[in-house]
Length: 573
Picture 1 (cartoon, one colour):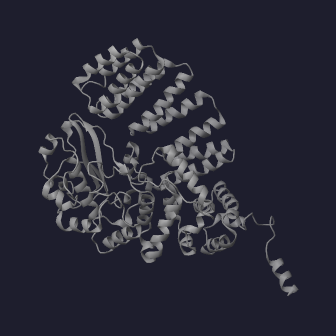
Picture 2 (cartoon, one colour):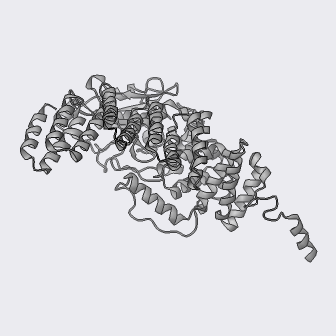
Picture 3 (spheres, one colour):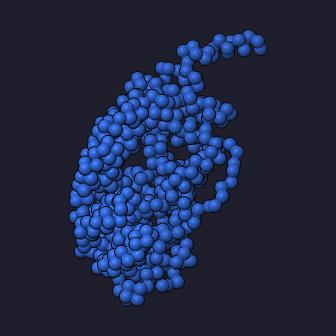
């Protein structure tokens, strides 16, 4: 027995002698991850936990990146999995609750209390699923790229486990579908989804069991019932398919009774007879005791019912869809969009140009908040599947690691490579600003980066305005108030014609700054300038975001006669 122990001791490498912490040999950094390596890590973590593996995997990822082996992404995502699975369950819940609070995404359908549990997140996944996920670089990239701070890590992992346990054979073919369901179903939907003009007793807003949704759509695709090839779509688009507010029987009915398909789905909107009488009688809430698609088709409805009917019918056919709502000259309106046969999003189905509706709002089912302008454009352009963008993501990830370890110069070098690979990587630009500030906090250096960002995102109005606003702040910090004002006016004029919503937002922010810093006479002059600019011919949104806040401000300052005068003069809206 003694001889056997001594022999094993001689065969095992000593720490620090040709081997890095965590038992990873330096020569492993320059080659693909082997299934045996991943299996060994999973088995070791089963007895010792994932915490001990994190430093070694992180070091391996950095070493692979710094030596440009080409295998850095695989090591990086393995490190990220280890770090995630090592996270204590209670700590994950705490951080998630904080993120929800910061984002303001809490809503009444969410639980008020979350039960504490011992152990780490690794308990959410079986050994078999850990092996399947950790060894899949493509899925790992999609998983960590898609994650939002308001996704609940315990629930996302638990849903993946539940789907895998029920449908292990299908899981391998439909991993993006499983991921889409996990990030949508981890949190209950908001009470106003898919729209707020139907009573909750008629439309309960309850999602079906996630494993059943997975089985339903996977079967639909495998039997050629889906009009999109679901295995080819990323989770970022599939999440607009799986957000269903109806029983499966409703989807089955729609496939049989709603003729329009992938080539002409927009026609489904006009299948619903428009009920002008409801609008004239101010009956915006659905008046019938049920909200089945067949009932809507029989009874007719207003725009939200048309959009709901068409978007639900699209999902029934395996087509990702989304509903939009917006303000126009005559009030609020709803329409829908869908992913067409050419893999392009058609976003104006039921939208009427003559009403001058501003950019529409749609729910992001992953967060249950409104999807922002640039994210919608990013989805439609589909550039995030490009290899150059994926490289940009990896460079940004390592830049973030360097920032966390106090190496800003290395972070700056990495993130510069990121924006060079793809200038549409928003995270890269935000990381670049952080790295630049850590290396050199000179406002002129920040100004230079912001001017680059403004140019990089001139196709994306909300991002251009965001970086331009930061640029104006830096200019004011340097005492360049005239240049700051010029930058703000430039964007106001640029988007006044075709992006009234952004012009209104810009006007509201300029007026808000005036209300904080100027005397009342100057505030009124600025308000009148706004009325003569973006206020001319504006939609009801201008009244809500500019006129009423200013009137309330005047009243709060004791300027009641002026507030009443402006309130009367606003009747033209």
